[in-house]
Image (cartoon, rainbow, N blue to C red; front, side, top):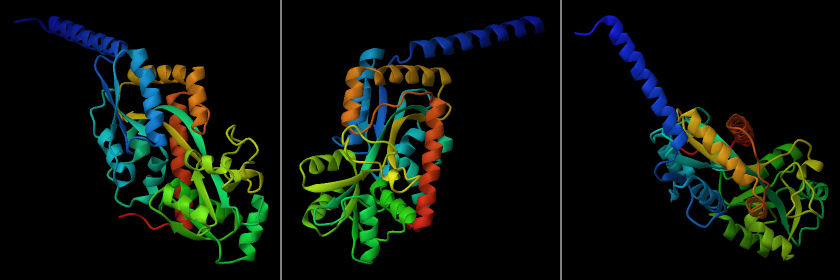
Length: 325
């Protein structure tokens, strides 16, 4: 039988060993492949961002960051799978605009993104583009607002679906400008753009990657970008906020992990991602996708997530968007 003093000493040694093992584990991370869950099919802009950064993480850290595409339920299946995963750093999430919007759009979510996801790092912000059919006479945002008000009930606003960032960017514009339009939701951007080109709808606030080729080709006219500053991809197109002060609607992307993921692992991922974002080649590719890199702390990304969630909640409430049950 050992003495009480000896038992206490052994316990202390055990705790020290455990702490040491934990710190070594964080220092050696990752020791096996990391699953990176993306809530969309392969090939879209969201998937491309994950694969771009995932490839560099794999090369720098010596373990594969394996993209697992898990579409469905407006991105919620992917998000819930990560939230319920072991918080060990081996399952992470591609955080995207659907996450912020869904927090208010879906009535019965089984999770709370702000509470249940540990922010790791932001990647970039991508603006939408306020784009009109060429037959619309307005050449500026101010002229378009006047045109809508002079033609009540006659201007149709397309979107890639109810509750998408494309839809809600338009709702925010209507609320802040007083220009009321008819919302026409489509099942994706492609059919919406087809009808914009054909004149069945007059305007769309589409994501930069899917609309920019049509703008550059002259098939449609860009009136504004939805960021607060000009986009280097469309340098001659002004920010919508120049005409509607305070307007901002960008797509914020980043990485999240299950809450309670060790802070040392989050810090290591954040450091690696920030260094990747600073690489000229990665910066150029992200800019080509619509937004320059955002380099910052996990806490800064967490504050962005909270702000985006609150912003879209207000838009959904003000626009009286029907909740998904």
